[in-house]
Length: 283
Length: 185
Image 1 (cartoon, chains in turn purple, orange):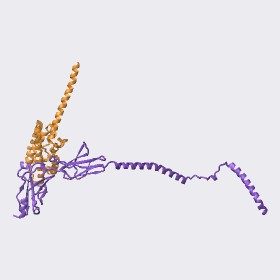
Image 2 (cartoon, helix red, strand yellow):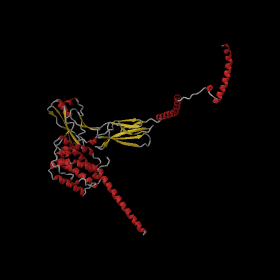
Image 3 (cartoon, each protein chain N blue to C red):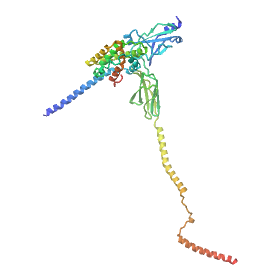
Image 4 (cartoon, helix red, strand yellow):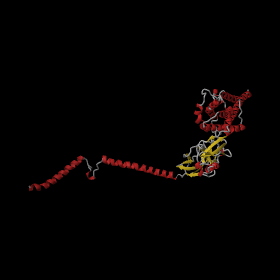
């Protein structure tokens, strides 16, 4: 018998991986030989065992398969005992069937909490959970970290997408824990360790409010003053008012001014005549 | 005259209390029966059936005949008879329909196997419920079951089986409707 086939046969031990899923995995650790083997996997469920004992159903994805590991989640679709059998083929040679010692029921799966990432976006509490597949739901519990605080529970079905849990109050710390739930088998994992985040207090918003107030007051003072100044500038530019110096201001009435001026002219003329005589005499 | 009027007032009150008590008991009983179906993952079964529905129904040689839906057999079932009727129909499919159908296509065989095993699990869940609560079969449920079996026996086994398989969506919709509103355990 070919050494590779012998190893394939002896190594074809099936064990269901019981952690958040159902995988067929070879346990011996021999990996090099598997490249030569073709694995055929079939299963027989309780119904076939009871009513059609001769029928084995080939696996959807694992018949045939290469390599020591194969995901049989799509085959294990009912919560009943499953019997599995596997054999190896190398060229024209085929090994005998190897079967599970004890039937596998998916409700024996050991569930673990998912990987969780808790973040905050401003005052919003955000959580992102690991994608474990369509069979899994998550129960998320979150609470304000203070004595007697109420615990809120939310069912999350979205996978790998950030989910908004709630809005946090400023200055408070909030904690989150999560557990896996699989409706098909009615089982859940224990809760994960709690992760907490804290939101900053109101100092930043206060500073912003103060700044806004000061700015508003400045605007209240500056704007009217600016408007007044602009008005004055426009008035001077467009419609200037002529301001006479005091020396040119007429304080008396025009008649008096004319009569005064006549007297001044006569006096001036007399003064002028008297100065003109010598000039005339000279001419 | 005063005594008569007091008596008159008490009588309607007592009747009202009686009616309320009977109503309460009936609703508790109906709710108790519906709670028998909590742990069923119908969505997965419906998905599996949808994938093979067209192929199965195309193989039905008697398209004008029905086995489950005669005179709306299922729709006339009252809430008190839901548990018994579900138990009977599950047995009908598990003990008769799936056994009489010989499927050669491995992909279809896989889906039918999945549905059959899910029904087996539902039977177990219902059995547990029966031990805790009452799941009596009244004449209405027994007669409806008899009609369905009679319709099945009028055809040859392979034809009857393929037809019953094709009417699985009727059965699944009926189960879904009758345990709608219950919460998961």
